Image (cartoon, rainbow, N blue to C red; front, side, top):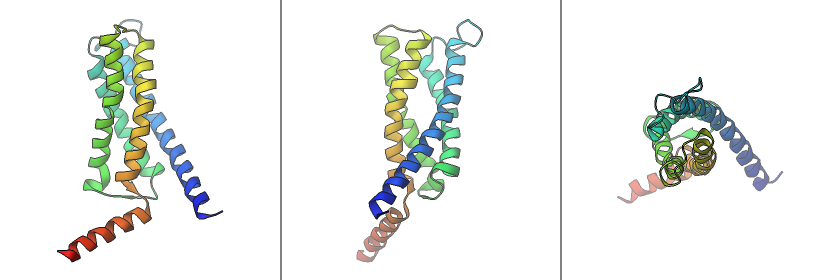
Length: 165
């Protein structure tokens, strides 16, 4: 297999692992969100009138699950860069990308006036998280868990910049 085939195989493997970890984290967030907003026993949940706050709480827990799985499995062969081994950047990327599903949920709730579990979950946990996942996969590979070649290039540029001073 040529170099392009190996790169594509690595990308597919990382993508599958990233989606698996994300699926588990999403399931955790989904259960928490629906419990907080829609309840588990037939009545509305304690945060029925605060779905955006409930979404942030649920997805913050999911984010912790996601980081552990990404670092330990999906990107374990890549070097983590940045403050605290990439943790800060990971959480910043996840918090920034959380705006996408929050926007979808807010649009459904406050513009369309839909507040049922199906509308909440399609807007936030299908459309919003799908778009957010694409953004996170790109950003995490680009800025946190670097390939060895990209890490070497970054280090060479830093060294060249210092030498020029």
